[in-house]
Image (tube, rainbow, N blue to C red):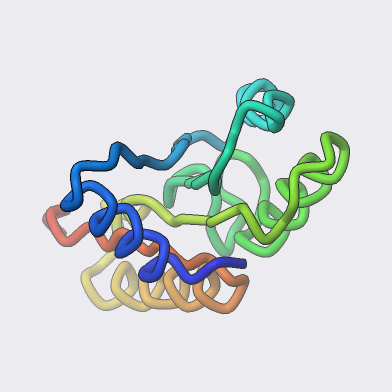
Length: 136
């Protein structure tokens, strides 16, 4: 898996030199949507960033009933179906933190949020978006 920081630095550097460069990015845990993107693999010249949100995927399964590791495994299986190299896939967690648990006590929500971030990182997600805007 490419290092997200290296990839983002490469994009910034190219843009600073006047060379257009970007990244195909999708924030969805819907596998019909992901298949539509990955099936176009021959048109994707660089890496692909696939993100799931804290409500979609978390240590309890989220509404997709997938943990971060299970989500990663399903994404990689789908990529294999279309011969899209795993090393061109960046995985991201979006709005990680306490968002799924607004009714919990601060301590419980923070404990669950920290565990979620840990599970995303341990599964190999390299783009982590922490959302500290959610009031408890």
